[in-house]
Length: 148
Image (cartoon, rainbow, N blue to C red; front, side, top):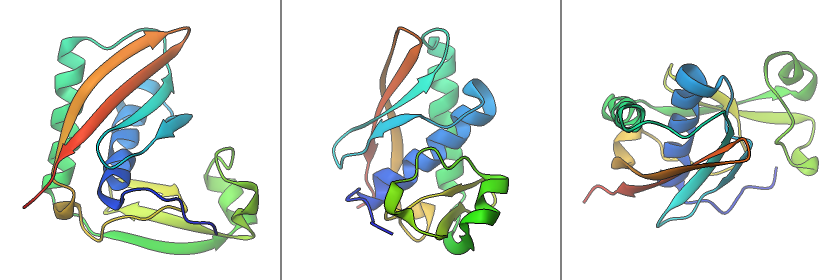
């Protein structure tokens, strides 16, 4: 696999955000994202912008997961098995026949080729920056207050 050049803390936070959004709001992970060390964004198919209450709930939910100090683990499965359990639409063409699964404790499981921290305690605090809605796309911008 070709590992993405993502910041491990921010990328792991993105996994948690995606799971919170999928489980509570959108029913799916982001279809597009841009992960950087200073700030990041995720785009979701949605029908409106978020309310202030929803942004507070998302922030609280992501930070509750981070505070659980969950281990991040990886395993590999054949592509044919992965197709039964995961969407392969966001995988790069060069992903190969053995696909990597990343687990954030028992909270999130997904296919991924990027770098991650070993435990959520390494992430710091999730900070919801802003959200916007345009033409069926909800964009969430976020950053981290990193641990000392």
